[in-house]
Amino acid sequence: MMRRLAAVSAAYLGGAFAAAHADYALNMREGVTQTSQSVYDLHMIIFWVCCAIGVVVFGAMIYSIINHRKSKGAVAAQFHESTTMEILWTVVPIVILVSMAIPATTTLLAMEDSSDADMSIKVTGIQWKWKYDYVDGDAAGVSFVSSLHPDHNEARMLGSGADLSQFGDTYLRDVDNPLVIPTGKKVRFLLTAADVIHSWWVPDLGWKKDAIPGFINEAWTKVDEPGIYRGKCAELCGKDHGFMPIVVVAKSPEDYAIWVAEQKGAAEAAAASADREWTKEELMAKGEQVYTTNCAACHQPNGQGVPPAFPALAGSAIATGDAAAHLDIVMNGKTGTAMAAYREVLNDADMAAVITYERNAFGNSASVVQPAAVKAAR
View (tube, rainbow, N blue to C red):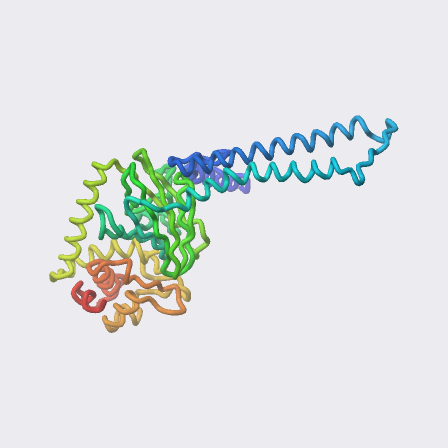
Protein backbone atom coordinates (compact mmCIF):
# COMPACT_ATOMS: atom_id res chain seq x y z
CA MET A 1 0.00 0.00 0.00
CA MET A 2 2.76 2.43 0.95
CA ARG A 3 4.63 1.63 -2.27
CA ARG A 4 1.49 2.32 -4.29
CA LEU A 5 0.95 5.64 -2.52
CA ALA A 6 4.57 6.57 -3.09
CA ALA A 7 4.32 5.69 -6.78
CA VAL A 8 1.10 7.68 -7.22
CA SER A 9 2.58 10.66 -5.37
CA ALA A 10 5.75 10.53 -7.44
CA ALA A 11 3.77 10.32 -10.67
CA TYR A 12 1.54 13.24 -9.64
CA LEU A 13 4.44 15.42 -8.55
CA GLY A 14 6.45 14.49 -11.61
CA GLY A 15 3.56 15.32 -13.92
CA ALA A 16 2.86 18.61 -12.19
CA PHE A 17 6.54 19.57 -12.31
CA ALA A 18 6.84 18.59 -15.95
CA ALA A 19 3.83 20.78 -16.74
CA ALA A 20 5.02 23.75 -14.73
CA HIS A 21 8.79 23.87 -15.15
CA ALA A 22 10.67 26.48 -17.11
CA ASP A 23 13.82 25.94 -19.15
CA TYR A 24 16.95 25.59 -17.09
CA ALA A 25 20.55 26.14 -18.12
CA LEU A 26 23.93 26.13 -16.41
CA ASN A 27 24.83 29.64 -17.53
CA MET A 28 22.98 32.95 -17.31
CA ARG A 29 20.77 34.15 -20.18
CA GLU A 30 22.22 36.33 -22.93
CA GLY A 31 18.94 38.24 -23.21
CA VAL A 32 17.63 40.32 -26.10
CA THR A 33 19.05 43.79 -25.46
CA GLN A 34 22.47 45.41 -25.77
CA THR A 35 22.49 45.80 -21.98
CA SER A 36 21.81 42.13 -21.36
CA GLN A 37 24.55 41.19 -23.88
CA SER A 38 27.03 43.53 -22.14
CA VAL A 39 26.15 41.99 -18.76
CA TYR A 40 26.58 38.51 -20.21
CA ASP A 41 29.96 39.41 -21.75
CA LEU A 42 31.11 40.93 -18.45
CA HIS A 43 29.99 37.79 -16.62
CA MET A 44 32.01 35.60 -19.01
CA ILE A 45 35.13 37.80 -18.71
CA ILE A 46 35.04 37.54 -14.91
CA PHE A 47 34.31 33.83 -15.14
CA TRP A 48 37.34 33.09 -17.33
CA VAL A 49 39.62 35.33 -15.21
CA CYS A 50 38.54 33.35 -12.14
CA CYS A 51 39.16 30.08 -14.00
CA ALA A 52 42.66 31.20 -15.02
CA ILE A 53 43.49 32.22 -11.42
CA GLY A 54 42.17 28.89 -10.18
CA VAL A 55 44.26 26.92 -12.69
CA VAL A 56 47.44 28.85 -11.82
CA VAL A 57 46.96 28.63 -8.02
CA PHE A 58 45.86 25.00 -7.82
CA GLY A 59 48.37 24.01 -10.51
CA ALA A 60 51.21 25.49 -8.45
CA MET A 61 49.91 23.76 -5.32
CA ILE A 62 49.61 20.36 -6.99
CA TYR A 63 53.04 20.69 -8.64
CA SER A 64 54.62 21.63 -5.31
CA ILE A 65 52.90 18.80 -3.41
CA ILE A 66 54.14 16.23 -5.94
CA ASN A 67 57.67 17.47 -6.63
CA HIS A 68 58.65 19.21 -3.43
CA ARG A 69 57.22 16.91 -0.78
CA LYS A 70 59.13 16.10 2.43
CA SER A 71 59.64 12.42 1.50
CA LYS A 72 61.83 13.56 -1.41
CA GLY A 73 63.96 15.61 0.92
CA ALA A 74 62.74 18.98 -0.30
CA VAL A 75 63.65 22.04 1.74
CA ALA A 76 61.27 24.99 1.80
CA ALA A 77 62.54 28.05 -0.08
CA GLN A 78 62.69 31.35 1.85
CA PHE A 79 61.16 34.50 0.32
CA HIS A 80 61.28 36.60 3.51
CA GLU A 81 62.01 40.29 2.77
CA SER A 82 62.18 39.56 -1.00
CA THR A 83 61.43 42.88 -2.69
CA THR A 84 60.81 41.17 -6.01
CA MET A 85 58.14 38.85 -4.57
CA GLU A 86 56.43 41.65 -2.65
CA ILE A 87 56.20 43.74 -5.84
CA LEU A 88 54.85 40.79 -7.79
CA TRP A 89 52.08 39.80 -5.35
CA THR A 90 51.04 43.47 -5.09
CA VAL A 91 51.13 44.40 -8.77
CA VAL A 92 49.59 41.23 -10.19
CA PRO A 93 46.32 41.46 -8.14
CA ILE A 94 46.05 45.18 -8.97
CA VAL A 95 46.37 44.45 -12.68
CA ILE A 96 43.72 41.73 -12.42
CA LEU A 97 41.30 43.97 -10.50
CA VAL A 98 41.75 46.90 -12.89
CA SER A 99 41.23 44.64 -15.90
CA MET A 100 37.89 43.58 -14.40
CA ALA A 101 36.89 47.04 -13.13
CA ILE A 102 37.16 48.78 -16.52
CA PRO A 103 34.50 46.71 -18.37
CA ALA A 104 32.36 46.52 -15.19
CA THR A 105 32.31 50.31 -14.79
CA THR A 106 31.60 50.84 -18.47
CA THR A 107 28.63 48.48 -18.32
CA LEU A 108 27.22 50.01 -15.13
CA LEU A 109 27.46 53.55 -16.54
CA ALA A 110 25.61 52.45 -19.69
CA MET A 111 22.89 50.72 -17.62
CA GLU A 112 22.28 53.86 -15.54
CA ASP A 113 22.14 56.26 -18.50
CA SER A 114 18.41 56.68 -19.13
CA SER A 115 18.81 60.03 -20.91
CA ASP A 116 17.40 60.74 -24.39
CA ALA A 117 14.62 58.16 -23.96
CA ASP A 118 11.90 58.02 -26.62
CA MET A 119 9.17 57.36 -24.03
CA SER A 120 8.67 56.78 -20.29
CA ILE A 121 6.53 54.27 -18.41
CA LYS A 122 5.81 54.45 -14.69
CA VAL A 123 5.83 51.00 -13.07
CA THR A 124 4.15 50.69 -9.66
CA GLY A 125 4.30 47.52 -7.58
CA ILE A 126 1.07 46.81 -5.71
CA GLN A 127 0.50 43.61 -3.69
CA TRP A 128 0.36 41.48 -5.88
CA LYS A 129 0.10 43.11 -9.24
CA TRP A 130 1.81 45.74 -11.39
CA LYS A 131 0.37 49.03 -12.58
CA TYR A 132 1.70 50.61 -15.78
CA ASP A 133 1.22 54.32 -16.61
CA TYR A 134 2.44 55.54 -19.99
CA VAL A 135 3.83 58.98 -19.14
CA ASP A 136 4.56 60.30 -22.62
CA GLY A 137 4.91 59.23 -26.24
CA ASP A 138 2.09 57.98 -28.47
CA ALA A 139 0.48 56.07 -25.57
CA ALA A 140 0.55 58.99 -23.10
CA GLY A 141 -2.37 58.62 -20.69
CA VAL A 142 -2.79 54.86 -21.14
CA SER A 143 -2.90 53.14 -17.75
CA PHE A 144 -3.76 49.61 -16.65
CA VAL A 145 -3.10 46.98 -14.00
CA SER A 146 -1.40 43.67 -14.80
CA SER A 147 -2.27 40.64 -12.63
CA LEU A 148 -1.73 36.90 -12.70
CA HIS A 149 -3.96 35.50 -15.46
CA PRO A 150 -7.42 34.60 -14.02
CA ASP A 151 -7.22 31.02 -15.36
CA HIS A 152 -3.87 30.46 -13.65
CA ASN A 153 -5.11 32.15 -10.48
CA GLU A 154 -8.14 29.85 -10.35
CA ALA A 155 -6.04 26.75 -11.10
CA ARG A 156 -3.65 27.42 -8.20
CA MET A 157 -6.45 27.46 -5.62
CA LEU A 158 -6.63 24.55 -3.19
CA GLY A 159 -8.94 21.86 -4.51
CA SER A 160 -9.33 23.42 -7.96
CA GLY A 161 -8.60 20.07 -9.64
CA ALA A 162 -7.29 21.92 -12.70
CA ASP A 163 -5.20 20.09 -15.30
CA LEU A 164 -1.95 22.05 -15.14
CA SER A 165 -0.66 20.53 -18.37
CA GLN A 166 -3.06 22.81 -20.29
CA PHE A 167 -0.82 25.79 -19.40
CA GLY A 168 2.39 24.27 -20.74
CA ASP A 169 5.58 26.05 -19.68
CA THR A 170 3.79 29.30 -18.83
CA TYR A 171 1.88 28.10 -15.74
CA LEU A 172 1.87 30.97 -13.19
CA ARG A 173 3.94 33.04 -15.67
CA ASP A 174 1.10 34.62 -17.65
CA VAL A 175 -0.87 37.82 -16.95
CA ASP A 176 -4.16 39.36 -18.00
CA ASN A 177 -2.66 42.65 -19.28
CA PRO A 178 0.99 42.48 -20.44
CA LEU A 179 3.20 45.56 -20.72
CA VAL A 180 3.52 46.48 -24.39
CA ILE A 181 6.49 48.43 -25.75
CA PRO A 182 7.58 49.32 -29.31
CA THR A 183 10.69 47.78 -30.82
CA GLY A 184 13.63 50.00 -31.73
CA LYS A 185 12.74 52.66 -29.13
CA LYS A 186 14.59 53.56 -25.93
CA VAL A 187 12.04 53.10 -23.13
CA ARG A 188 12.68 54.64 -19.71
CA PHE A 189 11.07 52.99 -16.66
CA LEU A 190 10.21 54.91 -13.48
CA LEU A 191 9.80 52.31 -10.74
CA THR A 192 8.06 52.75 -7.39
CA ALA A 193 5.65 50.86 -5.10
CA ALA A 194 2.39 51.61 -3.34
CA ASP A 195 2.81 49.36 -0.29
CA VAL A 196 5.90 47.21 0.28
CA ILE A 197 9.19 46.74 -1.57
CA HIS A 198 8.89 44.90 -4.88
CA SER A 199 11.48 44.32 -7.61
CA TRP A 200 10.78 44.42 -11.34
CA TRP A 201 12.84 41.77 -13.09
CA VAL A 202 12.72 40.50 -16.67
CA PRO A 203 15.95 38.51 -17.24
CA ASP A 204 15.93 39.01 -21.02
CA LEU A 205 16.22 42.79 -20.53
CA GLY A 206 19.45 42.37 -18.53
CA TRP A 207 18.68 44.04 -15.19
CA LYS A 208 16.33 44.13 -12.23
CA LYS A 209 15.37 47.17 -10.20
CA ASP A 210 13.73 47.58 -6.79
CA ALA A 211 10.35 49.33 -6.59
CA ILE A 212 10.33 51.12 -3.21
CA PRO A 213 7.44 53.12 -1.68
CA GLY A 214 8.26 56.84 -1.67
CA PHE A 215 11.21 56.50 -4.07
CA ILE A 216 11.58 56.57 -7.85
CA ASN A 217 14.22 54.32 -9.41
CA GLU A 218 15.13 54.57 -13.08
CA ALA A 219 16.04 51.97 -15.67
CA TRP A 220 15.76 51.67 -19.42
CA THR A 221 15.65 49.17 -22.24
CA LYS A 222 15.66 48.99 -26.03
CA VAL A 223 14.35 45.82 -27.60
CA ASP A 224 15.03 45.38 -31.31
CA GLU A 225 13.05 42.23 -32.06
CA PRO A 226 9.31 41.63 -31.47
CA GLY A 227 8.66 38.96 -28.87
CA ILE A 228 7.27 38.02 -25.47
CA TYR A 229 9.61 38.29 -22.51
CA ARG A 230 8.71 37.03 -19.02
CA GLY A 231 9.85 37.82 -15.51
CA LYS A 232 8.55 38.19 -11.98
CA CYS A 233 8.85 40.16 -8.78
CA ALA A 234 12.30 39.43 -7.35
CA GLU A 235 11.67 40.76 -3.83
CA LEU A 236 9.88 38.77 -1.13
CA CYS A 237 6.80 41.02 -0.91
CA GLY A 238 4.21 38.94 0.94
CA LYS A 239 2.27 35.69 0.88
CA ASP A 240 1.43 35.87 -2.85
CA HIS A 241 4.89 36.99 -3.93
CA GLY A 242 5.18 33.85 -6.05
CA PHE A 243 2.10 34.83 -8.06
CA MET A 244 3.27 38.22 -9.32
CA PRO A 245 4.59 37.56 -12.84
CA ILE A 246 5.66 40.13 -15.42
CA VAL A 247 5.08 39.83 -19.16
CA VAL A 248 6.57 42.31 -21.63
CA VAL A 249 5.41 42.21 -25.25
CA ALA A 250 7.61 44.01 -27.77
CA LYS A 251 5.67 44.96 -30.91
CA SER A 252 6.77 46.44 -34.20
CA PRO A 253 5.98 50.19 -34.53
CA GLU A 254 3.00 49.40 -36.78
CA ASP A 255 1.49 46.83 -34.37
CA TYR A 256 2.27 49.08 -31.42
CA ALA A 257 0.28 51.93 -33.02
CA ILE A 258 -2.72 49.59 -33.42
CA TRP A 259 -2.42 48.54 -29.75
CA VAL A 260 -2.26 52.18 -28.62
CA ALA A 261 -5.43 53.01 -30.57
CA GLU A 262 -7.22 50.02 -28.97
CA GLN A 263 -6.15 51.06 -25.48
CA LYS A 264 -7.28 54.64 -25.92
CA GLY A 265 -10.62 53.45 -27.28
CA ALA A 266 -11.07 51.13 -24.29
CA ALA A 267 -10.17 53.96 -21.89
CA GLU A 268 -12.77 56.25 -23.46
CA ALA A 269 -15.39 53.49 -23.21
CA ALA A 270 -14.52 52.88 -19.54
CA ALA A 271 -14.82 56.58 -18.77
CA ALA A 272 -18.19 56.75 -20.50
CA SER A 273 -19.40 53.67 -18.62
CA ALA A 274 -19.03 55.49 -15.31
CA ASP A 275 -21.68 58.00 -16.34
CA ARG A 276 -24.48 55.61 -17.21
CA GLU A 277 -26.86 53.54 -15.11
CA TRP A 278 -25.89 49.84 -15.00
CA THR A 279 -28.35 46.99 -14.50
CA LYS A 280 -27.82 44.62 -11.61
CA GLU A 281 -27.18 41.75 -14.05
CA GLU A 282 -24.42 43.73 -15.79
CA LEU A 283 -22.77 44.59 -12.50
CA MET A 284 -22.95 41.00 -11.23
CA ALA A 285 -21.44 39.57 -14.43
CA LYS A 286 -18.56 42.04 -14.48
CA GLY A 287 -18.16 41.90 -10.70
CA GLU A 288 -17.56 38.14 -10.73
CA GLN A 289 -14.66 38.61 -13.17
CA VAL A 290 -13.14 41.39 -11.06
CA TYR A 291 -13.62 39.37 -7.87
CA THR A 292 -11.89 36.29 -9.34
CA THR A 293 -8.89 38.37 -10.41
CA ASN A 294 -8.47 40.57 -7.34
CA CYS A 295 -10.29 39.14 -4.32
CA ALA A 296 -10.68 35.36 -4.58
CA ALA A 297 -7.10 34.59 -3.49
CA CYS A 298 -7.82 35.91 0.03
CA HIS A 299 -11.59 35.72 0.43
CA GLN A 300 -11.80 32.46 -1.59
CA PRO A 301 -14.02 31.85 -4.65
CA ASN A 302 -16.95 30.88 -2.40
CA GLY A 303 -16.60 33.99 -0.23
CA GLN A 304 -15.85 31.95 2.91
CA GLY A 305 -12.40 33.54 3.41
CA VAL A 306 -9.64 32.05 5.59
CA PRO A 307 -10.48 33.39 9.08
CA PRO A 308 -9.08 35.11 11.00
CA ALA A 309 -6.55 36.49 8.48
CA PHE A 310 -9.04 36.85 5.62
CA PRO A 311 -12.64 37.19 6.87
CA ALA A 312 -15.59 35.65 5.07
CA LEU A 313 -17.76 37.87 2.89
CA ALA A 314 -20.70 35.51 3.04
CA GLY A 315 -23.06 37.01 5.61
CA SER A 316 -20.49 39.59 6.77
CA ALA A 317 -21.53 42.91 8.27
CA ILE A 318 -19.47 44.80 5.68
CA ALA A 319 -20.90 43.05 2.63
CA THR A 320 -24.51 43.28 3.82
CA GLY A 321 -24.37 46.59 5.70
CA ASP A 322 -23.98 50.22 4.72
CA ALA A 323 -22.91 50.51 1.07
CA ALA A 324 -20.84 53.64 1.71
CA ALA A 325 -18.78 51.83 4.37
CA HIS A 326 -18.30 48.88 2.01
CA LEU A 327 -17.13 51.24 -0.76
CA ASP A 328 -14.74 52.99 1.61
CA ILE A 329 -12.95 49.81 2.71
CA VAL A 330 -12.57 48.53 -0.87
CA MET A 331 -11.36 51.90 -2.11
CA ASN A 332 -9.01 52.75 0.76
CA GLY A 333 -8.19 49.41 2.38
CA LYS A 334 -8.00 48.83 6.14
CA THR A 335 -4.97 49.85 8.15
CA GLY A 336 -3.34 47.06 10.14
CA THR A 337 -4.79 44.28 7.98
CA ALA A 338 -3.96 42.64 4.65
CA MET A 339 -6.87 44.48 3.00
CA ALA A 340 -5.23 46.58 0.28
CA ALA A 341 -6.55 49.84 -1.19
CA TYR A 342 -8.01 49.45 -4.69
CA ARG A 343 -8.40 53.18 -5.43
CA GLU A 344 -5.58 53.10 -8.02
CA VAL A 345 -6.21 49.55 -9.19
CA LEU A 346 -9.87 49.50 -10.23
CA ASN A 347 -11.77 52.01 -12.37
CA ASP A 348 -15.21 53.24 -11.37
CA ALA A 349 -17.16 50.54 -13.21
CA ASP A 350 -14.95 47.68 -11.97
CA MET A 351 -15.15 48.84 -8.36
CA ALA A 352 -18.93 49.30 -8.49
CA ALA A 353 -19.29 45.87 -10.08
CA VAL A 354 -17.17 43.98 -7.55
CA ILE A 355 -18.87 45.66 -4.59
CA THR A 356 -22.29 44.83 -6.03
CA TYR A 357 -21.14 41.25 -6.59
CA GLU A 358 -19.89 40.88 -3.00
CA ARG A 359 -23.18 42.27 -1.69
CA ASN A 360 -25.33 39.91 -3.76
CA ALA A 361 -23.29 36.68 -4.07
CA PHE A 362 -22.46 33.91 -1.56
CA GLY A 363 -26.05 34.05 -0.24
CA ASN A 364 -25.88 37.80 0.45
CA SER A 365 -28.73 40.09 -0.58
CA ALA A 366 -28.04 43.80 -0.35
CA SER A 367 -28.06 47.00 -2.40
CA VAL A 368 -26.50 47.76 -5.78
CA VAL A 369 -23.64 50.26 -6.14
CA GLN A 370 -23.46 52.30 -9.36
CA PRO A 371 -20.20 53.57 -10.97
CA ALA A 372 -21.42 57.13 -10.45
CA ALA A 373 -21.32 56.58 -6.67
CA VAL A 374 -17.72 55.39 -6.91
CA LYS A 375 -16.80 58.38 -9.09
CA ALA A 376 -18.33 60.74 -6.55
CA ALA A 377 -16.45 59.10 -3.66
CA ARG A 378 -12.99 59.49 -5.22
